[in-house]
Figure (cartoon, rainbow, N blue to C red):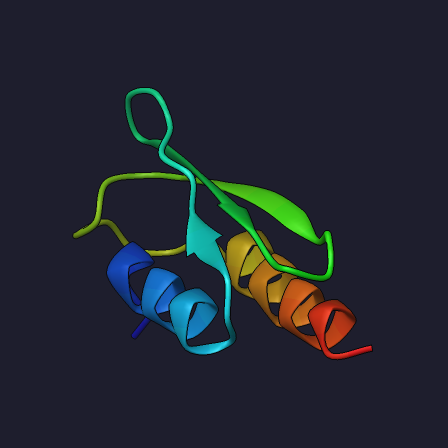
Length: 64
């Protein structure tokens, strides 16, 4: 069962990313190390495999 968008956002916030808002279903996040990314989708929607992969790679990148 795929994870939900809200779970990915929770992972980002736990890793220190700040929600900078967005327009429509898009949300922009920025880490204090300068790593930025945009996630699209409603909170209750299933996350796509590429979104889960992106979140994982950005969290890893922010730890460097």
